[in-house]
Length: 249
Image: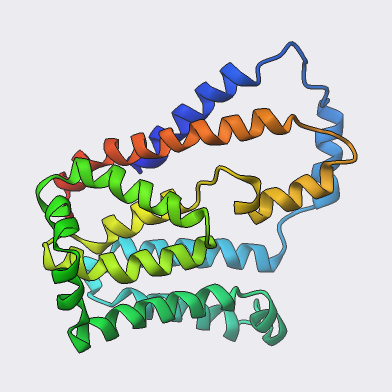
């Protein structure tokens, strides 16, 4: 919440500074109305999706009352949508990001396995110096982790960077009494940043699709993206007092 607010403010300010011009939007109310008419009203599947999200959010908000574990709430919402026919068997197979879910499950299983085999203790001893900074000087640990993440991203993809750093640092954070969620959040927010175009697949795709029309300035986008890395680190620093106040740091 805090990091998102800080990033949003910085992004708006930087956009206003770098991309401000005198052009006026040329979208009329008639065009917008025509687009709404083409979309039409919400269908049953869309209402079911909204209802499922609301039900899941309500289950999370009242978890301290009903004592039902969150995975079972998620399964209940999924089963309701399947039973009522809002999600077909074919949609369930093709429209769910199974690659990401398998990756996430494997990552969680890897951490559990390392803890069961005692590898977390071994890693904690080998990276004791890093755990010392993590525990005693978290403000200095943040740039160390950020720099390590960015260096790895120069050579390996985003998902591999997250898997490597999480496998090493999660056990160390547990040994030092720090919630692994905090470490994971910093890894994710920094691993998603990029400096060179080859590091970002969706930028390459966007560039390929729009290059004939020359819709944007590549140097300006790369400059904007480089500066935004500083915003990410600032967002993490701004979140530290909040994390401490809720007891996860």
